[in-house]
Image 1 (tube, rainbow, N blue to C red):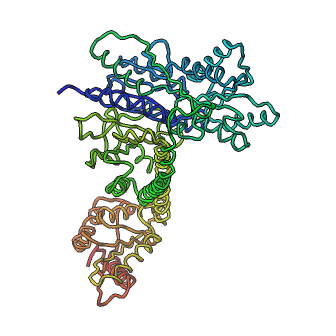
Image 2 (image 1 turned 180 degrees about the vertical axis):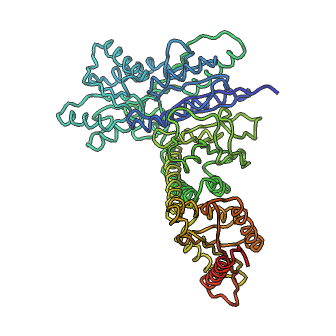
Image 3 (image 1 turned 180 degrees about the horizontal axis):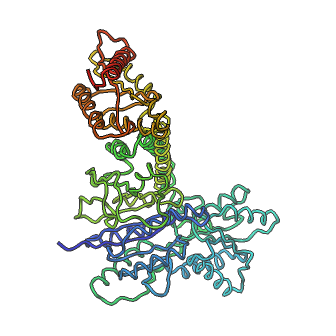
Length: 639
C-alpha cells in the first residue's frame, strides 16, 4: 500500500468564505491520491486583546512539521507577520515544500489570484460604464498584501483615467469596520458624498450597504458599492454585490497539482497566478449576471430551519456545560464527555476529539503550576476520543501524532484543529474530522470552541476551589500536634454513624478509646515539649496498629478510633497487637517519655442495646477507664 501523504494547512477562520472553496479544490484534485489534510485553524484578530490572540495563534505551534510532507499557508486574513515567518522557518527546517496563498514572500512557492487584474477590471468598469470620478476605498489592514494590491490597482486605474485616489479617501478598518464607518458618516453629514465605495471584500461591502441604508441612501441610485471575493451571501444580498471572483477552488486545485509535481520530482515554477473574474451586479447599477431571485426566495424558506438549528445548537452547548460542570474531580471529565457524546452527535459527527494538556489534572492539586503560553508538551491527554463512532479510552499519547486514534486509514481525511485556551494559556485543542462544511459555517465553529474554552476554564477553577475547600476542611479537622483528626472531625463522623444506625439495622462498627498514662508526670519532670513528644509517640502507635481506620484526638491525652470494615472484623486481634507493641516500647525505652503507656477499651454497636453512637462511646470509655485503673494498680498493661 502506498504511504499516505500528510499536508499541514495554516489558516484563520475569519477567511472561511474563501478558505472553503480552496479546501474543496484541494480535496477534489487529491481525490485519486492518498492524502490527509491537517487544518490548523484559529480566530486571532488584530482588534482582539493580546492574551486571547496569543492563545489562538498557539495552535500553529502544534504540528511537528518533520512529520509532514508539505505545508500550505493560507495567508488571507492572517495579519501576523511574525507568526507567518515562524511557520515558514519551521517548514524550512523540516525541509518540506511550502506553498503560500494570499502572500508572496518571493522565496517559497506561491499560488494566488491576480488581485490586481481583478480590481483593475472592477475599477475600469465603474469608471467607464458608470462614469464615477470620486471613489472611496474601504481597506483592510495596512500590512495586508491583498488589501494593498487592490489599493494599488485602484490608484493605477484612476491615474490612467486622469484621476487620483486621495489619501483622505482611503479608510483602513483592520477588518473591524464600525469605528471607521462612524468617521465616514460624519463626512457624509458634511455633504461630502463620493460617487462609489470600493470595499476590500464582500462582507465590508454589505456592511457599508446596511449603514448607508440606515441613512436613507439608495444603492446604486445615490452611491455605488462594490466588494471583492464574490461570496455566495453577497450574490444573494439585495442589492447583489458587484464583486471579483478569485476562483479559490482553482487555486486549491493548483496547489495540489504543484505538490504532486514536487513529490514526483518534476520541475515546477515558483509563482503561479489564477485569473480573477469580475462579476458585475446590482450594487454598481448593472443587471445581476445570474438569476438569484429563486435562491433568495429559498433562503426565506430556510430561515425556519436555521432557527431550529440555532435552537438545537444552543441547547447542545448548554447540555455540554451542564454535563462537564457536574464533575467533582478531574476523572469525571472523561465520563462526562462519554455521556455527552455517546448519543446522536449531529454537530460533532462520528469523529471528534478533545485533547488536554496533562497539566490540567495536576493544576487541580498544585496551583503553582501554569499552562504554557507557547507550544504544547510532548504528551497530551485525550479526555475524549472518537473516530468513525469508535470511542476509545486512550489517556496519554504522543503529541506529534496529533490525533489519538485514526480508525479509517483508507479514505482521505480532513482533520480540523482548533485551540483550547484560557486567555494566553494553552489548555489543549479540539479536533473535528472530515466535515468541510464546518469551515464554511465557521461562526458556529467559533462559538462552539469559545464556549468550550469558557466551560473548561470554569470547570478547572471549580475543581481548584473544591480541592481548596477539602484542604481547608482537613485543616479545621486535623490536630496540629499529632496530624490525626480532631474532635470536630469526630463529631462529623458521629453524624455519619448516626445516619447509618437510622437506615440499617445490621450496621456494624466499633469504637475504641485510648487514654495516655503518665502525661502529667512527663510534663512536670521533663517539660511540655517532651510531653508533646510523648503524645505523638502514643498517637503513632495507635495509627500504626489501626492502619485502615480513622484516628481522632478527642482530648488532650485521649484518642478515639472508629472501626469499620477490615479493622472491625479484626478488632480483637488489633487490640491485642496494640498491647504487644506498647510492651515493646516498655522494654526499649529508658526515660518515661520514651515509653508508651496507654489505657484502652472498645465496644461494638449492638442494635438491641444502643440507640445512639453515644451509647457505644460510653461503654468503650468505661472499659478504657477500667483498663486504666487496672494498669495503675497492677503495673500490667491488660487484664
